[in-house]
Amino acid sequence: MKPVKHDRYARGQAGQILILTAISLMALIGFIGLAIDSGLAYGVKAKLESAVDAATIAGARALAEGADDSARILAAKTAAKDYFSANFPASFLGATPVPLTDAMIEATHEATGYWKITVTGTATLPVTFLGFTGNSTLTVKASGQSIRRDLDIILVLDTSGSLSSPSGTFTALKAAAVNFVSKFNAGANGDRVGLVSFAAGGVVDVPIVKDGSRGFNKTQVINAINALNVSGSTASAEGMRLALNEINGVPVINRSSLRMIVLFSDGAPNDVPATFTNGSTPVTGDLYSETSSPGTSRATRVFRYDRRDTQLGDYSNIVTLPSTGFSITGTGNIPLASFNNIRTLTGSPVTNTRCNVNKAARNMLENVANTARSQSIKIHTIALGAAVNTLEINFCSYAANEVGSSILKRLANTVDANTYNSAQPVGLYVWAENSADLDNAFSSIASEILRLSR
Image 1: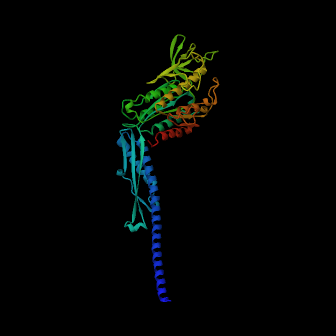
Image 2: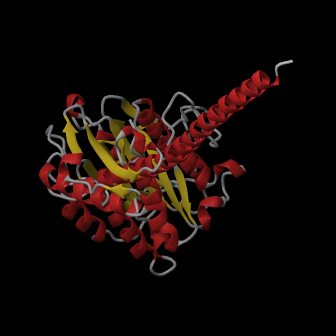
Image 3: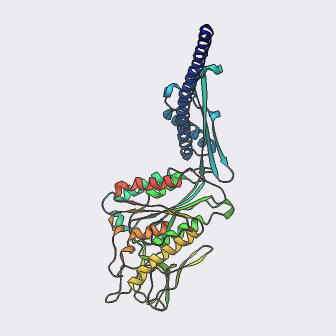
């Protein structure tokens, strides 16, 4: 036996184990340090990305401020800086954000019809275990981009007499509509916004710009909204027809990539815009379904189609209804019969009964909306009050799906509408329970329109 040799071997083996253990511990500590520093860097980057995203969205929304592109860019950059600072605290995980400068924010108005807001953010993070790389800090970067497309919008407002009650309802409607309009880009190269109002007839209060240029006069639109008065019946079909003709009046080559009609109403339509024959005399106007000749069910009262509430007279000899009403530019006259056979008119030719007139009023509104959606024009609708969820008339034996809210959902082509068409644009339907909810309802539609995606 050679015990001395064995002891030397054991001591050598033990020394190797100690060295390997030390190396393993150092590696383990390094991996732990790397994990800690990497985890901090990951957290900082996530926060930085969130702050950058908030900045791009705020910048895009701020484009509504300013009379021209230079002023809009300034507003966008100012908003982006404010939101970045608010969303990245100076001491988050020990990181220090680099304040945004103009050079870190790019706002460009593309010729193809949209704005592009790009923000690049940077933060420095002190490191403990990654110092072996020779750097005491780690630089984290993040970029974000938002797109805001140019818009062509027609706002269509119901001004019928029912909006006079309760007191203050119409004032709240006008305030909500003003706030809605204020969210869009006015002035040179801005959005195109037009205004249509209707009651017993329809009026283009502010035409959309049709000369190939862009923008709108925000003050003019706001003043027109504030000048509206409340009275009359509900000629929704004429309001929608005017809106469609207005938005299609923009030359095809100059149209925005996003085209919208936003319609507000507190009830179902009850006027038919057309030329009728009273005995042997033609009468052009909006025939109202809610009045009749004594002892008959025949509708008699006709209003001017180009005024909100001006009666032409009572015509007791309108025996039948025409097959079509007024014209949609480039499409032809609006049929009184339903495009999807959801309602049936009686008689051949169709007889003038209050029920036929009421059905035709609803048919025509939905016919115009269907034409608009088939042209990729998105329709959003806003409703007010309890009446839209009830059957407003009792002379047609309507089923439950004939309440005003059902009609407004069909116009917007919501997925829960009973006539939903997956091949056409889907809009929003928003119900305001009372006048206090109107501003939120209009703001919901505005937010949907201003979604920052292509």
